[in-house]
Image (cartoon, rainbow, N blue to C red; front, side):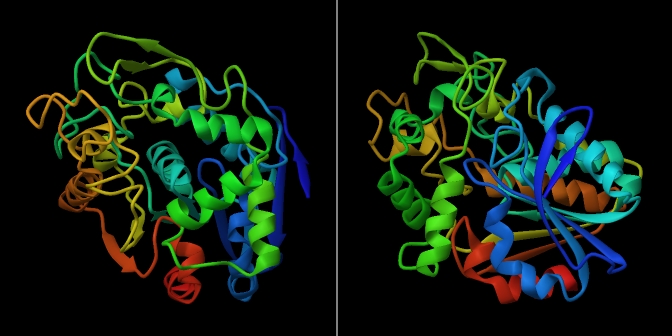
Length: 331
């Protein structure tokens, strides 16, 4: 379906309409709402469940993303969208990049949420560019984060519509190697990955160069720059006054959001996969999981509640362990 708002035209899937409990499912980077389809039959037994495509993804409008607002553009888009649905209270589920958007939405609109569910979210301090559990930024600010850190082969694969490159990413990065979707669903997921909008202000975004290793600094426009610690610091989640319960679900074999992430220059340098790494003192791996736990522990210390649930699978554990995830969401 499509919902035309003042901000954009949003594509979405919906099932279970009429159920009292409301569930919003928000996808991650280089994906779409279709990644939740395997869960719809079970969730729709209990919830009015809606999964929208964020701007620049799937079939929603391709509009620029102002990274200087962090995840603000998506947050505002989704707030308008749920208003058009007529929802005043719901559970927000965010996977990967959608997890960061969920944190931003919780900071801004906690009073609307029954619960916040973070599935393999990026760190509250951003993706890349920080050195310790407290999110201390590397210098210069934005170093080793943002659009300049995106693999050039990924950009080229999106531009050239390279299905096999996307299949490799799906089955070896998103999912734990060895897991495969049913063939028809795998082809659909690849179709949706290839709908990611490449261009100015969209994927991946702009960046600048510097002398410090790894020579790239986040820019101020586009999808991947929202995740720079310069713009995407969500650690204020711990201090909000209204605190919905938080469920943090993560895959036990996630290689992308990890304290040893294969998407992090610090860890890649330590492995010798990126030449010139200056060492642990200057550029350590980002402790992403430890950073998330640090912020959520502060959330709990300030009167909130959270639960950490580790399930089998990788970064795409919500599709790899659908029974465990649906059970936790239904709760």
